[in-house]
Image 1 (spheres, rainbow, N blue to C red):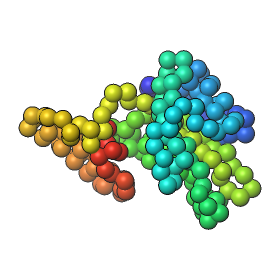
Image 2 (cartoon, one colour; image 1 turned 45 degrees about the vertical axis):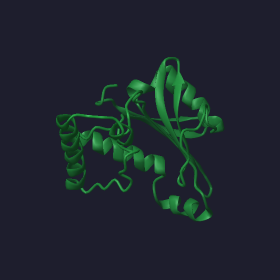
Image 3 (cartoon, rainbow, N blue to C red; image 1 turned 30 degrees about the horizontal axis):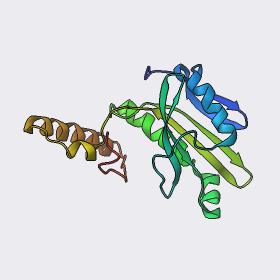
Image 4 (tube, rainbow, N blue to C red; image 1 turned 90 degrees about the horizontal axis):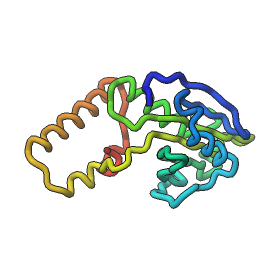
Length: 179
């Protein structure tokens, strides 16, 4: 995926999408727009969190992407998102900014949002899947030489330092969120 892609806006089936031009014409994006019409998990859910309804790996026509689906949990959240961007929108913006700063992140491919009278209703974030990439927690459970551990520490420290120098704070930086 070319990191210098143009970002395009499309409205498909009542869902407003921001999508990288290189991802727009893929069978993967075409099938995701159909998910946008009924907003249900296409495959088994990987994680459920308080703010996220589900996240999963999704495979279509050879493409593999990671999906995160967000749903407001209360009336307060619906009202809050009348003035604030949705979680998918905020994650998209943050991932794009980290990309520009040279921090290694899965490439954000698209995000879609369906709004209603009472604020946003649902949003979906699509990122590049990194098949086989272990989380930091998984990596730490196997044996590694001192040089390898030192190298990983330096890379992680550099990425966190770059984020902090630019006023970005992850707020959820733990072993399962670092690939």
